[in-house]
Image 1 (tube, rainbow, N blue to C red):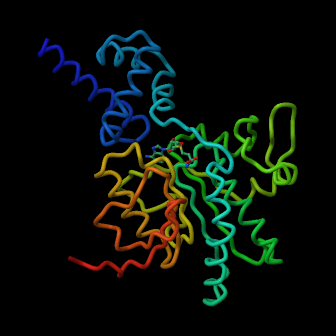
Image 2 (cartoon, protein in one colour):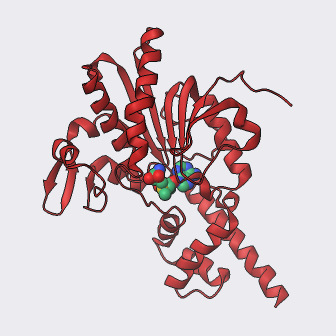
Image 3 (cartoon, rainbow, N blue to C red):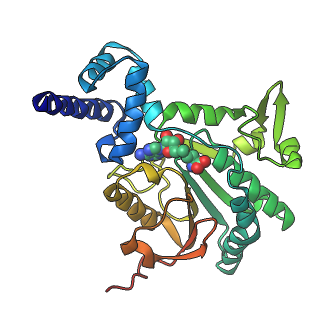
Length: 293
Ligand SMILES: C[S@@+](CC[C@H](N)C(=O)[O-])C[C@H]1O[C@@H](n2cnc3c(N)ncnc32)[C@H](O)[C@@H]1O
């Protein structure tokens, strides 16, 4: 029995190795309990009794690695998820960012949605920004705007680029916003092109040691980064790596938004001020701001 378990954990390592080779992601660094629970779902779905059986299924069945990746990176999201946050972006965060831009005579505006799933969240941020600019009688043409949505799952990004959603995805969208920014096609809702064209989607592994933000070239200098409900799956060591990347990527005075059950690791807290507890919004001081001891 002991021997069998030992061998079986070897197959778990081989499964991680296969995922790493295919997608460049080291899931062995993710939170073990979460990963094992999700693996168990695919094992049940493929009638695999243990990791050895499942490893052979992965090797035999084309498409099973993709199924596993999908299951390991569950994409629960919707437009304006946690509506309060988007109201806070409109009422407090965008005014603060834009005022600082005016003071610094800077017309760039850079936003990154990390772990963006099918795009619901980063599109919601974009709509909120447009609504705010409209209230200020400004237009996006007054700014040099870059908005990125990144995820590890390329298929999810393809869907994000299409911008077509079912009614569950838009159930929190106010009617006037739905009418203004979506075209109804039967049971589906299609985002209008002027919103889609503002967001640049690119595949990006947050845990990669190699880069510091979306790999599409323009790195750093973000005014706002959202990374919600993604870090909960990472081990503490991995989270540390990701937060260090965010610290390198944010403008001084820029904002970081986390999910409800996520927070900044203790030793990096001094880089940030928690400005909105309920919405988990942190304002970045600057890279030299850490108080030691
Ligand atoms: C639950 S969804 C969060 C969606 C959105 N941020 C929200 O809160 O509504 C988590 C997303 O993180 C992505 N993800 C998981 N590991 C990742 C990694 N290493 N790099 C980038 N994205 C990752 C998953 O593919 C998934 O789309």
